[in-house]
Image 1 (tube, helix red, strand yellow):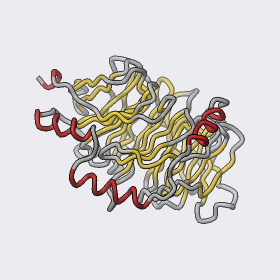
Image 2: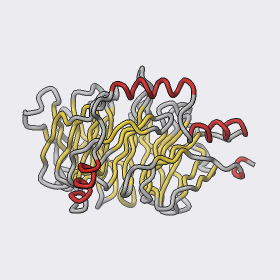
Image 3: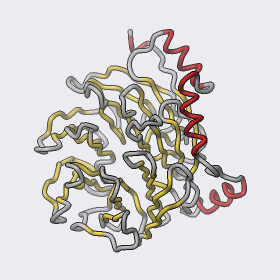
Length: 352
């Protein structure tokens, strides 16, 4: 019966081109936040609960492939086709640092302690920038065997994880030695690699399969074959009993972690789904698509009351949520874009 229920997502418009990456902040005193990266060159920050737009980061001159927020959601980082990675003040939208690269930057990640930024891309070089000394040359670990697609930290910033666009597998580097210490094998390129919130699992998607690896001993815990080609997968953070995937068929599939059985299937996007992510509390998840929208879906079977509440939220936040969103909005000064600036950047973004 649950499959018959129609999930009503919150639809977040604003991007003019495909959405290629999403990232949720941890829960902060001001709530939690969602940042989206798009080929339109203008990453967007939203209230993670309501999807309400907070601000747009203006400054990149090409597609933005990756985005993230630090642990406190005070800074954002983005990786772009304009050969740069930027660090932003998430309250004002100002650029704090711009790190130039020699080729397209595909991935970026803040360390857990927020002091370091990890980047990787078409250069096949993984760099670690010290944000306390932004003018210092970055540290480089042993070269990646292929063009970098994803990067992440684990083991309290002692280990780096990365996958490539052109070869299979996920590699792990020891930060202290800079050497590759482990490879998690896959048949094809891993397009999505996520470290679970509790640090126990690494979730990988390689087109036809979703795999769950022990993040400490690197053994394969579960492997589930997918019914269609998928690009992204995310494990529910609170209980770890379900996971979501998105890909070519435009649907968001929800599966049982233990059995691999499909629990639900949500349709709404009008193009392939490039990224899916669970919110930090697991009560909702977001999807980003070729159609330029971000959709936020509620987790679990819906009741009639839930459907009404979602519909109300889609028309604007209600009650307590509105107060939180307003409080955050008051902190953001001058974090808005002019029509002139937007049209100018759109022309430049077209020259990826």
